[in-house]
Length: 144
Image (tube, rainbow, N blue to C red):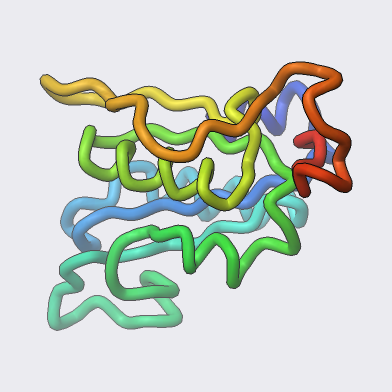
């Protein structure tokens, strides 16, 4: 996804929040690091949920634990982004609903889960229909 986005729009601001267990379970590590070194507009945020004893915070990963809405809120300047999510169903359900609660329009949340389950459509319903409340009334801004 990152390669495609950078190829199509090389100047687009991209924050990639990437969570894995640890360095033994970190696909595309070298590829992503290389992309980030070549594109200053690509910001990698690496999370290890179960770091190994030899995994070094600040070198191998930035944050221990899983990617959460609190991390997004702390690391992004606003909720005015397109969010592309991919992961197992429990992660997806949690983060998709959290983004909706953060007033991210449904049209700005793009998700694909893997595994046997699908993402349940629950949580706060933010209208994407024009004319259903102004930006000032809803607090929702168009995603970039």
